[in-house]
Image (cartoon, rainbow, N blue to C red; front, side, top):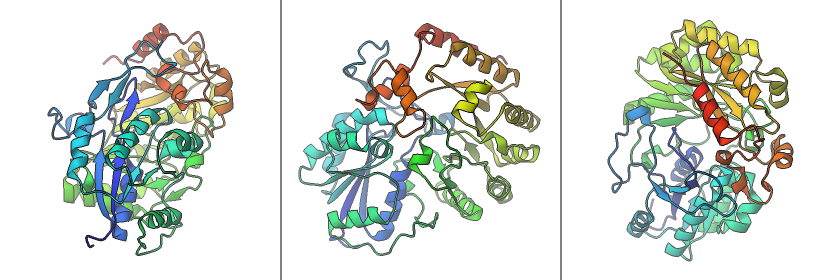
Length: 448
């Protein structure tokens, strides 16, 4: 690497929302790309606008709650059309002055890559890009990520980026970066090799207090409310030993104990995939903790699998149930039935998991959903000594439920992704008042 090697700045933008919290959320795709770019020979810098451990931030224990914690927030006016929402709107992340100072310390980049997550967080993306543009008026800015992929036309019109790219890491992306920088990549990228990219560049983070792991790409299911199939059309699994090696590498090199499974369907084909990974972790003797905020596939449970999860150190187990009402469940997905859930709950109890460790996601705010069906689901889940966790429905473009959501919403979802914010219950019926929501939250509490 020489001083003439192109310098790329990678940026994780602010979040503008009514609520945001670091529940093991990191820009995995951006740091995977960073690992690849480093291997290709680029010089890299990284700025995380959500950095909870910025030198100017108030001190907080990075390992409390296994790495989770609140972002710094700055109150903002509610966006037009959302002034009636009885919640405070904020910008989450480092202060604007801190970002200016951080940029001033950097060598000028040749190219800036900005990622994006939830579609309705785009105002934070816009604000981040506007500040970057002011700091580096002539440097090209490329926007990628989930919002850029799901709402590409909107992003091209409004984000302020010079180029918006949809989809994941591929050879075309490397070619594009080469055109912007005039730099020829060192090696081609094999799109069929799920392990073609190096480990994500987690070392660019200021502190690695937990670490996301991706053991597979894509999902074999096509749930009506989920965009996974659109974002990652192909299902590919990493070799179990490669996953084990990565976990142990970060544990031994950086002391990481908390690992977060980012897979959409970790327990699918568990005997050939999750099982060998868990057995390898157990054999290593490493004392680790695993968390599954993206939910585990319920059909993958058996007494032996629940036992492996317990022995490997799974502390936060989330189940993707969505609803226990049969007609609703069949309309939204066919990945699980009620018997599967009862079996999984029994296996987890026998393996020693407690309600504090195991929760089942229940979707709320779906088009046409009645409050009675949510109550029924809450009661059934609690009866199995599993904690119900309300998951607010987000209308997402390119999903099978999108047209129904557009028709049911009191907002013009197609006009502005901001109106898809699950915090405002965009598709709620009259039965889903804010008072009702408080009552439902109270119902989910587990007595010890």
